[in-house]
Image 1 (cartoon, rainbow, N blue to C red):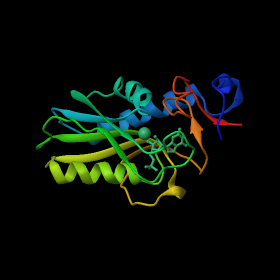
Image 2: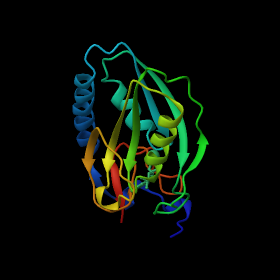
Image 3: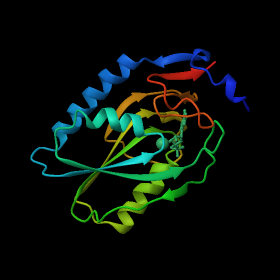
Image 4: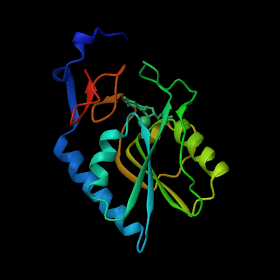
Length: 182
Ligand code: 5GP
Ligand code: MG
């Protein structure tokens, strides 16, 4: 489906998770993460761009562990509503992660191809002390590759979601809620 840019209007979405629901769950997730790293002196958080930027920004405000924030950029959807099946590594530059506690932050896990690729990449190059994964949304039914999710915000069905970082052809990332295109 191709839409003209003037049709990408927030009023054409059904709200799936409101701003209040997202913020409440993200605070709980941050509490789970804080509790999972007792006495941790440094956590390296790696966010997968572009979709995770809003989730990351809200999540880290509630993280009490001293942390460094890094970014990688991976792409798999192109302009469509389904995964292309190939993961494009747009930017994988990272500092040394040797003996570090590393938390990956991702907006949504769908087929699992993106995170399976990235976890394999990290574990083949870096000997981290620990490696965990936090995702805001988990589309379990769509999974093709097994990936261990340590912190999960909401389970979701097999539908195409937009807003709060998630795009459709580049649009809707700015919305404070998550919606479904009608
Ligand atoms: P996977 O590799 O697990 O199939 O997909 C991961 C990536 O696909 C996510 O980081 C996200 O960019 C994109 N994606 C998966 N499901 C959705 C969705 O419902 N809406 C949007 N906008 N992107 C999605
Ligand atoms: Mg993503």
